[in-house]
Length: 140
Image (cartoon, rainbow, N blue to C red; front, side):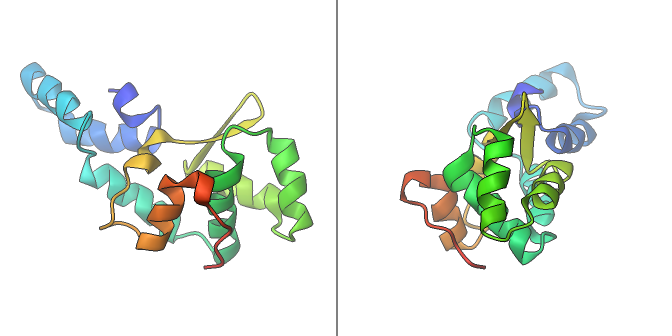
């Protein structure tokens, strides 16, 4: 179950609520389904977390998704601060909302964001997230 939500606490909480009271067979069925179809409630919670960000925090999120996934947090902070993004607080908010993970001083995006579909995001944001190599900094 933890693997299906990419160790994302928010996803684990939502999935746990869904599975409570279900049989072992139903749990296995749901886990198999999650491999090819993301749980819409989890996606909705993640989208709500994103929507609650201010403009600068959204820009930091997209920059991490496009350019800085897996990079050193201190280096990313210096680069984003040079762009007047108040990176320390912005990265902290993203981490608090479980939109990014910081482990061993590396910033990483959760794999669940690769599964966001067009019903949850503006098509330009979705394209940006899925095609990081072609990414440009978007001003929302």
